[in-house]
Amino acid sequence: MTYEWTLYLCLFLALWSAVIGGVFSAFSEFIMAGLLRSEPSGGIEAMQQINKTVIKTQFVAGILLIAPASVLFALHSLTVFEGAALVALIAAPLVYVPSVFLMTIIGNVPMNIRLDRLDHTSPDARTYWTRYGRDWTRLNHVRTIGSVVTATLYVVAAVLLIASAQV
Image (cartoon, rainbow, N blue to C red):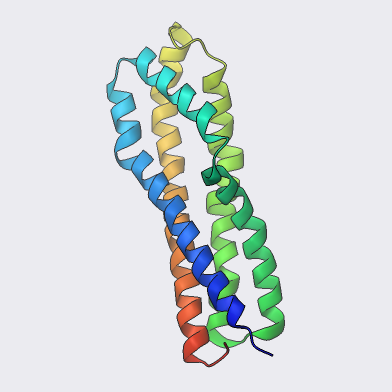
């Protein structure tokens, strides 16, 4: 039986993880920095609107769907692959789920919800904004690294599957 489709799935998951990592990186490197340099009420309001807009995008769908797809792919891989390729295929969700998926769900999203509940012109919002910017960006760095490492693991798995003639 041919498992060529697994090669394409590896490359798809690598590409989508890299895209997600790129968006996270942009936020960490210059979007949040720009928002934090703005007048707090302007930065807060802009971030509130970004958070309301992003929830309806393919970007969020990708963040959420890569987790179960990568776990299921790893479980399937246990039954058909071996060696270093299998290690990379198992490592990918072990990196992605905690560093991207869970970090988003239990870290960044609750912070976004709290920010959204604040009046962007209030003193409470101004106080929270400084901490939000620092903490949210730190968590986002973790998500960036997790996405890039996941993408790398899927590329490595694809190369190893070809090199070991498992596809």
